[in-house]
Image (cartoon, rainbow, N blue to C red; front, side, top):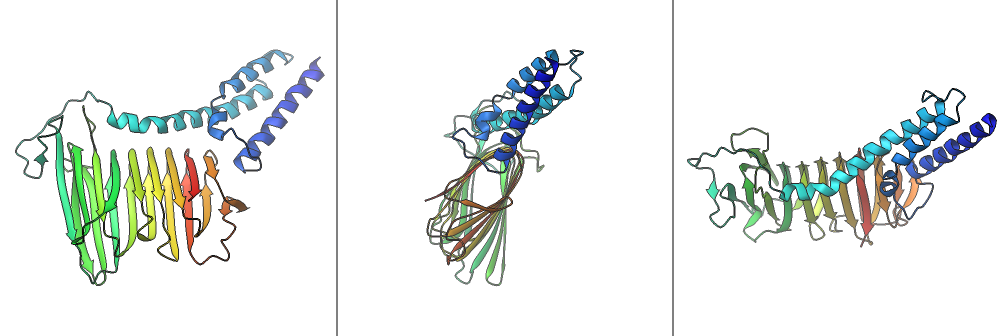
Amino acid sequence: MKNNGNIFWGAILVAFGVLMLGVVNDWFQFEVSMRELAKYWPVLIILGGIAVFFTPKRTVFNPTTALLVAFAIPLAIYNASTSAIDKVKAEINDDFDFDVEMDDNDDNFTFDSDSSNSYNTSQNFSVPFDKSVQEVNLEIGGGAAEFFLSEASGSDVFSAETKLFENKFNLEDEKKGTIQEISFKMSSKNGSDNIRLGKGMNNDVNLKLSKAPIWNLDLGIGAGELKFDLSDYKVKDIKMETGAADISLKMGDKLKESKVRIESGVAKVKVMVPKNSACQIKMDGALNAKDFDGFSKSGSRTWKTENFDTATNKIYLEIESGLSAVSVDRY
């Protein structure tokens, strides 16, 4: 009986280990994602408890139970983290019952009389378009907010409309030859980097960019949502650092080469790339849910489209993530 029990649990551990190794390294194709499988981490705890009865001394201090618990812990963390992704947007729009102190004499803010909450403030920014500018380096730093993108008017290379709760954006720009440097960063009303949430918070940032120049984007996004349709823009480089956020990027084919680098903690990241452009994905991070439709694995943590070696236009994606759900689709 004792030998049969050891054989049984040994087989279970081998099968589970091979399964997990295959999922992490994309050896297997499942209709059920890693994110769905992670929901069943308590099963490992149950199996660990059953394993106690198969040990001679019936103690929890046995190798089988220890291994099952060791597998269950990262799956539990992964499940909790991915669940947090789905709650990010809801948390942004929820009411927070925090005390708020406002200085009505602050001239840097214009109160929106149409807002349902008097603590929301609105700001408008713009940078005139200079025809000699060929390339723009745009740095954006934001806390908990929703970011949206549209086309700027003919007279502006950059403009923005913000509606924030007790926070503000600061705009700085400098022209260096044919390159425009723009810095657009959020801070709290007292000038600190501690972005506060409050009751009735509604942080919206509507950005408008000209389609004329080449763009290099440096995006620092905290908790929030970012939806950028860049299919009609000449995007040379994107660098994004994000925490718990919902990110959606739609790339175009206006340049022969575009690079996208994303560093995320717990996030939902979706990138769309055109079918007539080749694409390469390099991704670091084991505990991530991956969906790379139309890509083939070409090496360790590397995926490519079939036309990558021969295509004229190429998009390079580098993703470094802790616990995220990442998808790359072709349109």
